Image (cartoon, rainbow, N blue to C red; front, side, top):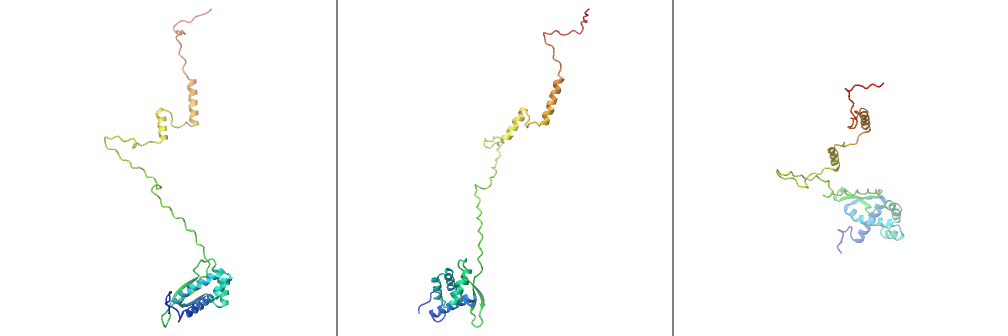
Length: 223
């Protein structure tokens, strides 16, 4: 007898094993869930999922391939018309095995195998991975300033450079002109002060060509 390649053989021979797995698969498609030993559930799972894959195709050739394994036409019809449309959006994984403990008597591990007929929920798009910040992209840090030793003059690179706006303001202040433009109210006050000063100017001093009036001279009388 040839040695089986997929674990211990079920039943007395290869033909018995094929018939046993075909009957279990037909019962699974009929009742949607059956309880059997864990070894039988694991051996029939690939066969049941292969039959579902043929049923999803839906053509005549696929139906004949399923009928070559499951001879019950009623079960095959139910597989093609009811089960296949429910798993059309599912890409594999049509069965589920759940362990239920051990059987009384021979202590064989038992399991429940069932069809997965729940609708497939679309997965959400995974968020893009956050890019790791490179040292160049990191926040700029202030350069370290080294205090010069006593007796040394700071280098040209170490002298702090003031902003252009600060320099302009300082130049205006040093020239004596106001740093900021005067407001309209201040301009009106200055204009009024200038007009008042112009009205109260002192009389011009007499020039050298004009004779100065003599206060002590007697007044001249004309007849």
